Image (tube, rainbow, N blue to C red; front, side, top):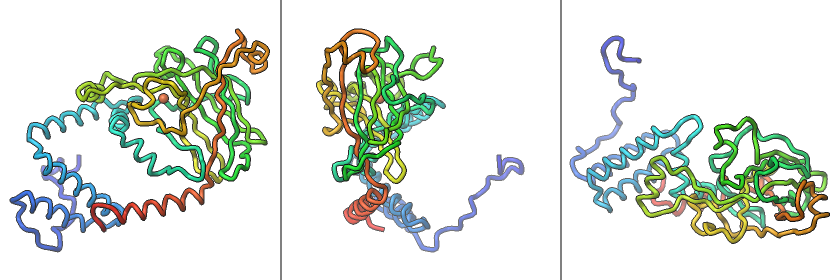
Length: 331
Ligand SMILES: [Fe+2]
């Protein structure tokens, strides 16, 4: 490592600040000095973020009279969160999810727009290897759960059909597991990628997803236990829709009636994303839809409305400027 070869520690080369700072020997001076030092940050946006972070973080410590033991416990907890991360497990995302931060960032970056379909959290179970399926085909292998047919159109906010939009979709099986949670996984299942046709239509066979617990065997699981919260997500079907010229949409549909709809552990549910599953009991209809057995399936019908990219960028810029005006500290 640099600095070890010749036995000397290496400074980062930045000189002392070009202004005088009082000795930080009281809480107020510590905060004031930290604020003053943010002036050195060359990038406007970074400086703005840093000043707000310092304002809120220092206020938190001050207002709660945080004890040394509590801060020590917090550092130990965050250390465990980091140590729990692996190439296929991201405990920091989970922490952000259960604290509502992921949902908040998503909501701020994807505000409801002109009747467009609202976004929802991506979650940790998206994979790059979903197979291509034709319109009308199945994303789930036989025996994975109760039959469900999903259909709708991909439209622009003005109602124009969007042909050839990519619809990526993934879900749990009837056990509440994604395919990646099985150690025996030898190929993707309950996930697929299809494209809308010339009129914007898409449709596919799937299974009714079920509610499932987010991972409870790490520090985030311990946190939820300690603060008296369950770790369940209501059942949902993930979708990610992309079409050239439109804002990419990551969302999910939440069948109504789930016990955990209002208390989703990761705050993903929005009222407009709650859907009704119709029960279709008709053998001919089941065969027509390609279901190999029985006479009953659930039907989820929902159009997906995308926002043109230029419209989305303009709306975000306006909202960010308005929020900055109301921020705790200015540039
Ligand atoms: Fe999920």
